[in-house]
Length: 118
Image (cartoon, rainbow, N blue to C red; front, side, top):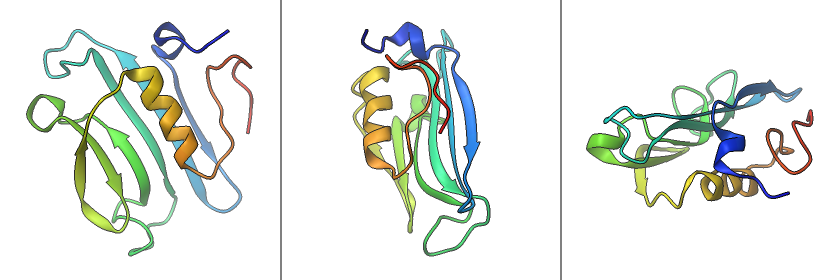
């Protein structure tokens, strides 16, 4: 069975790895007008201890979010560039799938395999 928006709605999980990296996923449907896409999300891959220029000041290696969607749109933050890139939002499922293709960690979360640990 393919992943659906309903599978992602309300999903949140953080895993910390032996190499002191972490993956944080938080996805929630919303009717808040600050989020015109209908989603509030963070898809984050980073480190526990910031290590510029390998990370941003907050430890981010790669992060998708829409914290400022109403004014800036959807952002991609990639170290070492402190300025986020504004990106097109392809829909929550495609966005989630893209995130997992782009980071070097085993996928977890809602999927056709269920919520499997790393």
